[in-house]
Each structure stands twice: as structure tokens, then as C-alpha cells.
Length: 170
Image (cartoon, rainbow, N blue to C red):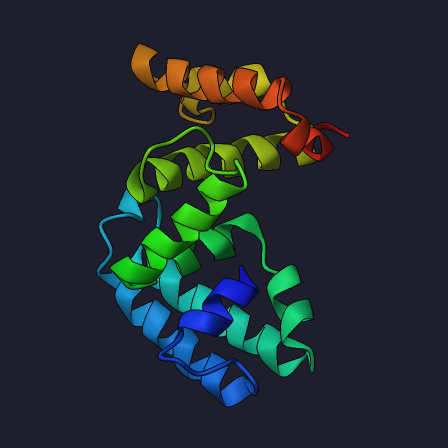
């Protein structure tokens, strides 16, 4: 991903933190207006993301380490904040390596990526996958609609049999 971004950011390589900071600022501004993030991220979420990634950038000297430490939510906002050309480049690269989550475009990918992020969080916090699939909000006892539950179950079943994502379950 970093290699792709290096080649595409206005022809400049990310050789210092100032170029990367400018890039992240642009991503933040674009993400705030992006319909791809949907309702799960508010403007304050994007601002919080921006502050946290800038803090992480200041605490590392190596850009590769910086990108390596981004979590799935950070990547979701980052990809949503890219211009359409870069989003399509990222998606094409993911598709070439069969990491596009069986989707046909970047919008579908980000929807499935959000579900993947929720599954990963559920597994890593040792919560029940069944509860994730059945409930939208456990505290309020709010159930998911059937199509939404099927979407979660389908992606979970695909991940379960995929060697590419086996490290999620170990």
C-alpha cells in the first residue's frame, strides 16, 4: 500500500514527514465529505483519527513502521479520504493480489471492510461472533435485520475458509 501511495501522491515520494502530514490532512478533509464512510464515522471520529495518526507520525522516524501500525479503522478512514483515482488504484492492487474481499468496486470493498473490522474486533476481544451477527446494539437489545445478519454471516463464512485471513483466527 505504501509503495502504491509513494508512486501516486502528486508524483512526490513520501520521503519526509511533512509530505506525509500534508497527505494525511488532505485525506482528513476528503474523508469528512466522503459518502463511503457512512454513518459509522462522524466528523469528530475523523478529527480524532487525524490527531491520533499525527501523534503516531511524530513518534516514529520510519514511514513504513508508521503505516504498519495503523489499525483497520485507520485504514478505512485513510482509504475513504483518498481521491477517486487513488481509491481505484488501491482497489485494483488489492484485487490483483486477491485481497478485495470478493467485491467488484471500492464502495462494496469498504462496506465489507467495515464488517471485517467488526469481526476482527469481536474475535480479538473474545466476544461472541453470534452476538455480533444477531445484534446491532447488545445493550439496547436491538437485533439486526435479516439482510444485515446475512451480510455478516456470509463474510464470516468466507473468511473462515480463506487462507489469506487465517491469522485473524489464531
